[in-house]
Length: 313
Image (cartoon, rainbow, N blue to C red; front, side, top):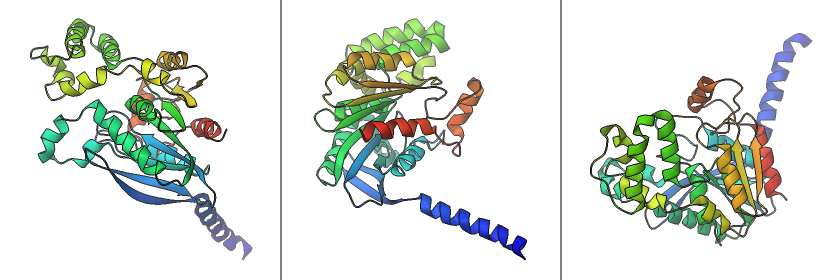
C-alpha cells in the first residue's frame, strides 16, 4: 500500500513546490505617451517593503514584451523578467509601440523616429517614478533598446543596464554586417549611409538593399544614425552595468568594451557561452540560430545573478 502512495506524494510535493516558486503577481498596465499607448506587464514580488523596479526595453523591429516577433519566439525577456521577480525585484516589460498600430495606420508607422522610442521610454520611467512605490528604478535595454534606454535614463533613473547593446553608431554596424554577409554590396551600403547621415534620403540604390533602405525606413535610419552610444553613455551619472555574451552573433564583445571604455566606473560582464537572446550555446552557429525560435529554452542563470547582484549593491 505504501508504494501506491509514493507517486501521489511526489505529485503533491511537485505541485506544492511549483506553487511556492511563483512569489509574484502579474498585472497588465497600459501607459499613455505622446505617440501611442504602451502596453506591458508588471511583475510584482510579494513583498511588504519597497523594492527596486527594472524597466525592460526591447530590441529592434516589432518586438513584444517577451522578446518575440512574428518570425521568432524565444521568450528571452519574459524569462528574464520572471527570474528577476523571483529575486524580489519588480519588473515592467512592454511591447514596442509599432505593435499597437493597425495596417491602416501606415502613415503613423512611417512617421516613427528613434526619438519616438526614447520619448516612449521616458514616459514609462516617469509613470513609475510618479508612483513612489519603488526603492529605485533601473532601466535595462536590450540590443537597440540599450541605446534607447541609456538616453531615456539620463537624469531620469537610478541605474542603467546595457544588455547586448552596440557601442557604435548604426551606420558603422550596418557597413560591417553587409561587408561580412555580402561584400560586393559594402561600397554601395557605405554610399547610401553617408547620404542618410547627412540627413538626405536616397532615391536610387541597388535593389538588393531594398529591405534595408526602402523609402519608408530611411527617415527612421536618419534619426537613428544621429545617436552615438559612446557619447550618450558618457552622459550618465548613475551606476552602469554592461553585459555581453561570448556567443553573441549580432553584437561583438568589442562593442561592450567600447561602452565600458566610454564611461568611468562602469561594470562590464562578459558571460561565457551566452548568445544575443541570453541562451547558453555550447555548439556551432546552427545551434545558436535555432535558439532564436525555441520558446522553451531557458535563459542563463548567470545573467540573472549578475543583474541581481548589481541592483542589490
